[in-house]
Image (cartoon, rainbow, N blue to C red; front, side, top):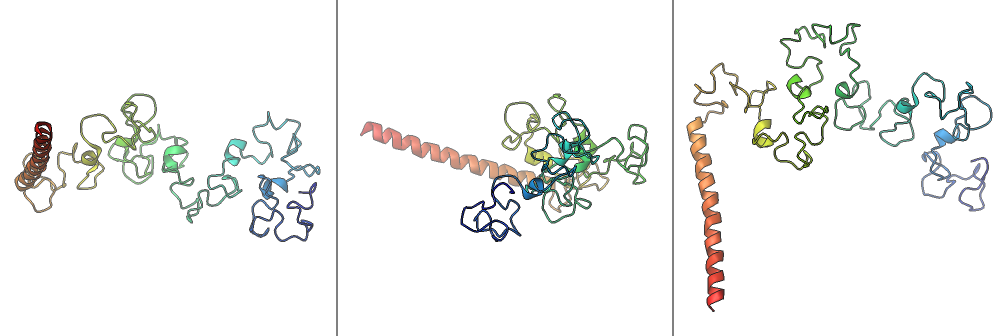
Length: 277
């Protein structure tokens, strides 16, 4: 900013101009006053106080290690690869931002700091979920919830059942919870009606009547009434006998297919008439 004291060339020096780049955003609200693409926070920062702004300085912290070889340019103890990430693009690196994704929930209370849809506990697990000094691999209760891991359906207490976290359908080394194509069929999960390619549509697999973390398609007792589904006349505990629900589904299926068949006949008849005429 120092080298050009009238960024928008409007005849008003930047030091007395309320909108240096004339973008309609007052300087006191503009993260980039002169509109050069470099946030003011970076332009005004001079870590080692040598008079050269960090964005022009080849050794920001003056430690003798050129920035291009230095894993911590400003010598603050936070690796650059963490500081340079700015999830919400507000000009404040995530390493210094108290709300990385700007969703109104402070990072200390947010289970997904960067708002990418993946829980922090899944992305940042350092191997000690409850931070008790005992690595999860040696800890009998990873999340310190009083439930031994062998009996806990969610060892690390991140809200994602272990059955899902440890699952890697296509064996590509990427857990399904992080994989964008679980079954490796070339169809992104967001467009695939059967993510894991097991022949059961996701909408059916996702149903978990009793909320125990086990999909009904794999649960021996869907409604957790202690009556095995094979003996239970109302698996999902909705008050409607399974036989009645199955009959309704059958009738709906037959009705839909009958409509399709009728429509096909009408189309065929119309085609024949057109051909004969």
